[in-house]
Amino acid sequence: MPYSVPRMKHISLAMIVVIAIGILPAATPASAFADEPVDVDALLRRLDEAEQRLQILETGTQRAPTDEATVGQNDVADPSFGGDAHDAAFTTVGPVFDADPASFNAQIDGNNTGVGPGANSRQGTLPRASAFAINYDTGFVLRPDNKDSLPYELQVNGRMQIRHVGFDRDADFYSNRGDTFRGGPLRINNRNEIEIERARLVFSGFVHDPKLEFFLNIDGDTDDNHQAIFHDFWFNYEFSETFDLYFGKAFVPGSRAWLDGSTRTHFADRSMATTFFRPDRSIGVWAIGEVTEDLFYRVMVANGFSASDLRFSQLDTSLAYSGTMWWDALGDYGKGYADLKWHEDLAVRVGHSFTYASQQGIDSLGIPSSEQNFLRISDGTRLITPDALAPGATVVGADIYLYAVDAAFKYRGWSVNSELYFRWLNQFKTLGGTIPYSQLYAAGFYADAGYMILEKSLEVIARASLVDGLFGTRWEYAAGVNWYVNGTHQNKVTFDITKLDGSPVSNSGPNYEVGQEGLLTRLQWQIAF
Image (cartoon, rainbow, N blue to C red; front, side, top):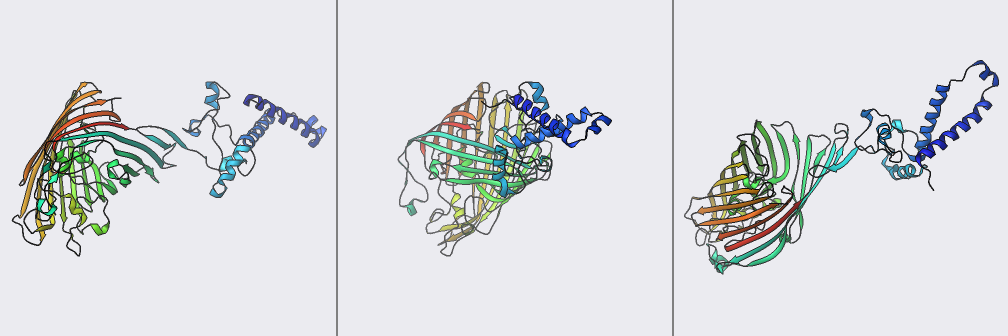
């Protein structure tokens, strides 16, 4: 039966006393004891030091002083001693590892068995083996005891949207300006399926310096061939609250509804108008900051208006320029669309965004670069589709100007979010003929509202959005309900019904397909950590 720690301590002390009694008479003449008195305190101190050395050799741990400066977040008291009095006086500092990585495994063996290279008494000259705490703080966090001496931190988050999608069409086919090239009208398909949208794993933290942060978002969707991709990633250095500099891949910030992300939306996803007008992701350089109290900005220079996962050969040589500014007019507005915090005082946010990009790239065969596939005109036809703007003519380049204005408020469970969009396309480059337009203008908006009928739990929602341009006007009307299971967006069930009047856009995220006329239903469970 193994000895308990207190019993082992008594045995060890007894062994040391016996050894000391046996050695002292042999090593010291009898006359020495007769002439000098025995220093009992000094003898006890030596015995205590010997006991500590023996404990290091046997267990790889040592007694630590009670000074708070020496006790880290990861220190764990030995429970075999029991009681708060001992916990306050002793901690387990942990095994000792050599600085040489090659001896790492050998030292682990030594520390576990009491023999080998790790079983040594050089505790005072070697660093601690562990100086990190693991806990949950809006994510699973590996955090250093002292971020100045060990400037490394890792946080892990995850999210999944499990969604049922149904669509009941009102028409079998849909016509637009690309019919001649495609060989006829578009077929509209019914839907009844279960999908996984946005299965994401996120790693974030800082390295080398608490101000040097990183972010890595890995995303998988069943509608993207079940492939996982590096969705967003960057390094950023926070010079100050006014200037935080980023390098990597992220949203081109041309729309507030786009920039606010898909985690905290009122509905299962963004509106039809937002999906039609907003930019996409791109690799670039951007900065975020607070100009003055509650006035914020974000500006970016990117590879393109929509250049999310493209190779250099699929891009043109022109960069995109985008920026946004927003003001929390009556103090901190908070995150998300819903008033989960139940603001007793009115909270207001207003802002605007602008994006410019020139897409003029074609290959040796006259085919437009891949980044131009994103743009559509108001009836849903891709801008670069042959015959889209004139018979025999194909647009292979254009300049884009997008301006958006947004406003939102929260008050006692009520929340309203809205954004107006204005887009101009000009400087057209064509092949095969000319087009009768020097500029195409389109406008639109979305507005949604919610009310918490049960505080922090049950919310009813409604939305309308519009895309209006030279080639058609398209509407969306929607209503639904949110159940915040634990009072947050991290465990939320959403059910919504949307009436589509000829969608001018296709996007798998919000389940829109060009030409959809009918009823779209979505039941989604979002679970996150």
